[in-house]
Length: 474
Image (cartoon, rainbow, N blue to C red; front, side, top):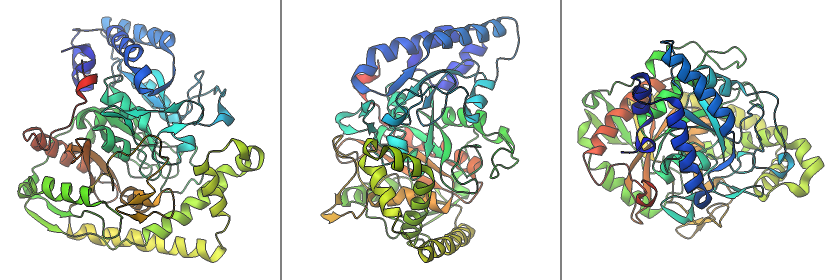
């Protein structure tokens, strides 16, 4: 097995055991990117020379018997929605095509402080809008399983880089599914955390359940390793809160036989395709017996569609007022349409959305007194054509907005619950299939334990095991 085929957790062990150096690991991934990325387009920028200097310094610390930090010199790719000092950060927008920040966002600082070697940036949708990673600056990141399909978005660059072994660990962000849909479409693991678990100082409204930073990996352990480095209690974010970081890594699998689990193919309202529903029934039928109790049930959160669209509109008005005023012609259709429709919101619309937002939270709290965890599909459809900005119809039903098709993810962004995206075999079209594992507020560590246990169950069943894009695994 080559270095790039090893899990991040195994590479960390090898580095700490002096079996390989951070420089060797970094060079293996650099070579991989140079060989593979022209066909995938996952990376937008690299800083290989600077990364080698960092890796060499960490190798020297290890040789001297000094602690290299939690990440021990592992390479980490950062999504191009996040500022990196001295490295181009475009947000997928021509407005910022040549922007080079003079500082890191805090989350990048956490990763560096933990011994992570930042070596590149991964592609995104424009300003994170939409779920097909394509923009007018860098073009599309394609799906490693079928290059005519999208990798998902907006963290599609990170998901594709992981699936093709171009990075052992990747950072991502999530507002309405941007960590979970790419993970589902590319067969990798992610966590949309409880708001505040990973602090973010540039959230447009500080007390807001959206605009979250998160971790991605090929396995639950790998993702949890990066998450632990990012989960810092930092007062710069008013949603940040004290927690025990050791609860995130290493992950101890839970006894599934003690859990009460709810299964839902559509959360009661999301426009989920017949194919996804059939796959959900078939796949969950193979492991439901692992749990103490299970039922077909969902929380009463159909109002999340209205609330999400209204609150999303407020975010776009605040975030893009200057962009729309000064650079309207440079904005892509998703951002421009979302901004213009948000202008039609009335003050009563906004007041009603905030009132109902509280109702959604209370309903989720009620639901999780009855169940320990909720499991639903990772997306309403399988990976779609890379030329399509979004899914325009599902089973002949026309979608009204560019986010309506993603109701399974944006509803859970609106409620603010933590969600693990976990690969679960392939769909009827032989593309990756995935699940969302949802828990109550601040149950992130518990979800990791559940996901680790399910990952083990899935690995023993060829119909559920994580799919591998064979053409990119050597």
